Length: 348
Image (cartoon, rainbow, N blue to C red; front, side, top):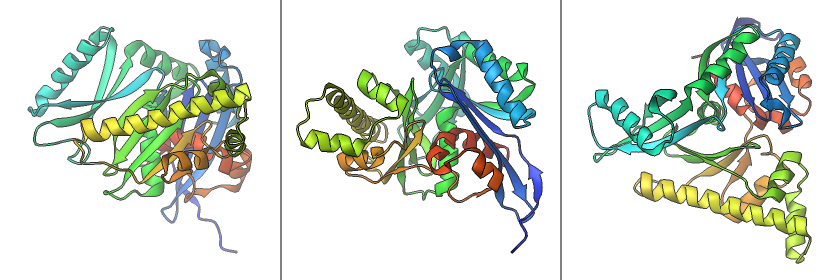
């Protein structure tokens, strides 16, 4: 049996914290140059009401890092409930005027004082939205108090955040690394979360669009959170003309989800890409409930498109003991997309 390559360098872990739980990924470089997952942890919050307490988060985080012997530097994420990404198209202007234009645009559309917000932006390439008649911008917005609170929680347990990133950007980095998208591909990824899910588009290997969407249907929201849906059985019940209130309620919520996906892409295609991008190659599902039985095939049938559950670890080495520590990795892998993308930042 060939000897396993030794670890040459360990990188700061990626730490994803939101209302549904905590996920951690740490990577290392081996003696043959490959990346290996050396630590993997997940702590799920059963009751969404209890984690509103800062003390609850601190205690949960402290337990996780003590169990897995994490200390020092980390990369962390802000969830889509406290930070958002907005696509803005500006007229052509010198680069040194962009920040001022963005501040004016945000202040015009926000009820919060611009001085209470933190703004960070990316200038998109031509395919993503940089045209002869304007500049495409991907803008991340978060309240300074939310960032400070997040950093304080990390520091209170002895961690040193190197960077704090909005979750969809971390997922995009993870998917790009894992799937090696071609420049001509257009990929949609959906990140399902209990409070605010996101619809996102990658084109020319960079994220060019993101928007939040909310599953307001109480039947579907409860079913997704408790993970008890079998979508294949649900479709069979529909075909039989089932009058069950719960089934009908869930199906109604799914119809709204399909409309959300279709309308979001049409808006991006016609309003933002000026019809340069009129179709997409596939949809990848990420997040807490993305691998519910039959969900991918349900969406595949309704959208007539390739839909797959994401697996950020599909081509990366994982220590056997790490693999065993999270149980069924195939089932839990989509939960780790944000943390994996954050962990990749340390390898750059």
